[in-house]
Image 1: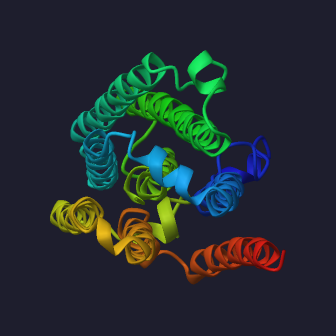
Image 2 (image 1 turned 180 degrees about the horizontal axis):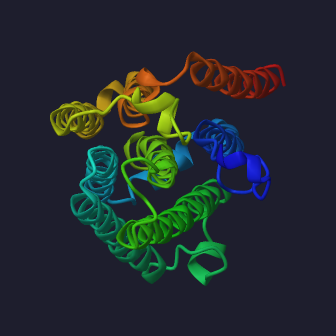
Length: 209
Length: 103
């Protein structure tokens, strides 16, 4: 028995608990859900108080750019799910390609978001700008929430993209294998959460006319 | 005896095929098209479209969680925990809405 040497304590890093890692990730996702959940409740209340203004403001947003970004995120959710399939089957190279595709799609999302934000900022709709300051209260609230919630979401996209890049790097170094791929799974869970939040943000800001 | 604690109960982890992932994506894209079409071309159904849009979003979220996030193949504890969080959030939302309507 190797253990008899007594050099390695039971949890000196030689035993892993993949189930616990995954559970930890889910518990973290719950805190994220409640973070965004709180913002959705704020949105709900302000929308009830300023129904007409929210309706009017939502027409300012570009439905098509929003739709394209929805498609980009859905496709990226598929590519990261596929990268887990690939690593489970032991195909590291394919897993890395799919992870990098996901990173590429996250950048595409950010570029489209950049153009959307730029056009809004160009119109002076960013909180604090002169045009924004003179907006009726309801419309100002809509754009405040729009920048706040899509901004927080974009921050999650940036973090997710970096995380997935790290997973690809560690897969390349052989630290993620068909027997040890919890890192890929957890990055996937995080990325799907980012997608889930966008699935609600999209209709609430762009579609509900 | 296995030497090391490998992934998810020693190789019983379910591996979804690429084909499964494609089907999930197609389902999600179709739902996206439906919700955009209703919103853009059915604007006169205002009250309906809010409920419809949120309903479709919820269906999409369930599809993502069930297939992409692998809940279908995970232990039931995950589903129960998620339901707990959903109930908690629903309680916050409903209580806030009740407060608003009783003012």
